[in-house]
Image: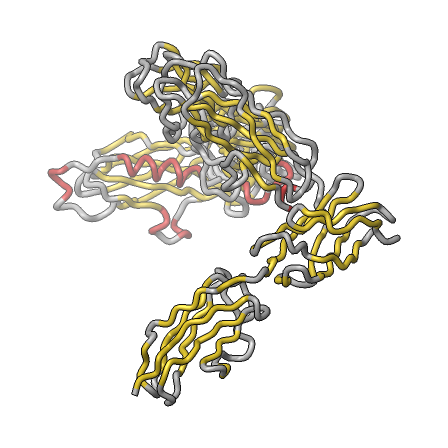
Length: 619
């Protein structure tokens, strides 16, 4: 390691030129002569000293001189020494430095290297003069001199993991280093692998053993908030007493210990904050957030308006607030805290207004069949005092069902395989709403798959009803509009295929078709019972000039019922015309050229479903 360049460069950089001469003198000091004494030494058995004497001139005056001896055939150097003026003046004087070449140093030629600085800040060095002009000393040494730098055997760190989220953390690194002559310096740091962060470089200290085989140690401080990563020991360089250098680049990563650094942060904000009012207070609950690496130690719950707060341990997610004013609406926010600090406040809770409480709250129960297509009914019990209204929310396995907020709920295929509950909430002005959740139903079963061969059937006519999902030869019944029309047994494959007559007693309109198995399972579909009916036929104009047309609208039909429009006995509607889903049909009717009153007629599924109006054709 060329310590001379590092130390001397630092020394010269810190030297401040004298202002009076800086503008006049721009020349570096001149080394007129330089000698070494003695010019030969033997370091086979002991250290040897060599004196360097330099005559230096400078217009402003020499301020500092430093130097060292460098082996020509290796990287070895002596330690840097600073010159002492021994004769003459600062503008023309003699300077002396004494170097120690250690026992066992590299044999061969060693050359003087120096640097100078004057009062004007001009710097000079031996690099600026011909190398052959520099004095040398011939060194004799042992037969096999030490020319290798120190060897890193292993490294360890303690602790092996730290969290710098709450505060900076100290990590102690130890290095097992060997060297034939004796290690002198171990320069090291910790760095975040691949992240670009590192601790300042530090010189390790020998804490055990010898420079030839010893343990070196240094303690690093990883700052608070440093990047979370694997931080690895980094050896910048090692050298020994002879100046042999080992570069950290050449050290295998497997020898460099790693400390796992976490950088925890404050928790995320709590979510799902919900407040339930009680008499003179409220109960606040929330969902614990991500702790971001460190356990949550507590929560701070604040009520608004006012400045009331409650603090609870980190394993709680609810708190009871008392001392609130009845009739005042309060919202609540929650802050989570860990060893790093507090989270952001949560979003405010729902508004909760403390008030009187029901002496007896609702008792939610459910009645109805536990299967698809069944209609379930919620019951409220007998709250006291009597509520002015109730609210309902149905759940499937605890998850709210969208739109299911009425007292009754028709079970769909989405609920098959799940259990249903209902929450009943009682309301009375001046009282805190009271709620109760029913016990769950059994698991919802699937309905029989029921279908009809026709969607619209003339009353008294037959229609084919099919059903899937029964047991083999299981008895079943078929009802239409609540009227029993068939009792029989399913096929060997558990299917139903029955021709049944639509009861003539049923009124015009939709009728429920229900197939019920002996097991109690059932399936429901519907058809439209097309009884004799009078349609309403309304033209835009009942008097139309010959060759013109009128828009006619027919209402009172079944959804999608076939329709035929005639004018004066001639069909004027397109083939395949049907009513819309509301049982309405509309079209433009040309009246032709024949003058006089003519019938405009709408005919539905059959001739007993009709409507007629008169339209007069004028000249």
